[in-house]
Image (cartoon, rainbow, N blue to C red; front, side):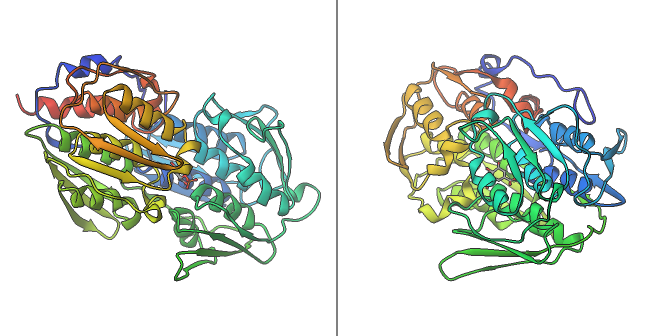
Length: 450
Ligand code: S3P
């Protein structure tokens, strides 16, 4: 049971193959943006008064973040008919210290952002997660948050379970200047959330601009937060501490990263034409569609409002290209689906600087390269770079273990639409974290042709 409805997943991967010869036609509904949904809940918890959220992603990751917000003191009211959530927050820095550890499932964003928020509070909270989340690095946030005065209890590996003892338990939150070695919205956001209770300005520098929803959404709540990008692409964000967040409401458009799976399915399946509506209009997140267009993908993006667009795609024979390592940050979640498109394209796809992929829900560098090789696609790897040699004849017939990684599961299910033999995906349940209706959405598009 998630936020609005009970979600169950069909045992699918092999069944899907039977629909292979049908084109995908029609309009697909894509769920709410995951990054914004998680932030809306966390900001709701940290505000005083009521935050109304429309268009929230109804999935496992958001569900666990919402449960965590309740455990920390937020009151949540769910209107199933209107599909809105109302969160009554507790304000900054005064969370409940729950007696029991908080389970975060698979959600890296929910966990890292909440650890940041709790780090600037007077609460003591223990977080734990599933096998995948328990293997993801947390030192990247622990190190700066310690400098801000928070304390932590963790294993030698600095991974979950982690107990956070907020900086205001015994002292104050210190504003810091921090240079992050990686461009990461999660690191940046954890520091920003902690910095909200600091007296003075906290500054975070990242080597490339990562997604900026924390900045944009907090600004809407009255926080003084600014960013600037240098000629060398270094992004510097400055946030001033504040005593409260002005409560505001959020209307969340559909997730471009989830839309990508529908678009790639369409691009690789003969005779397909698909439209996705109400997609978040954000240059960074739409970059992948521009890359696919450069590869010869017939894709149109129509802006429909200040922050939404609709995307139409048609079946296309893709020609692979070279990607520069500076493009990695904007494509960070898109490499699994993009790699499937490249495998079905013509020529060599070169993708550079993919080191961060090793720290996602699974080691995606490994899952992508090994999964494609097992399906009969030539993949060459050199340190953090990968070359995929596109083939118009993907053999398939292999088994993929999704390893709790929704994007790996969805991507290799897509490859079955193109491969000669179906690919068996073990671990489709992971898709519940971001796109619970993934299979039924594809199935519905198949039915349109009959
Ligand atoms: C996210 C940030 C990204 C991305 C994740 C969502 C966010 O991680 O991979 O799926 O909402 O902040 P990093 O920016 O840490 O690489």
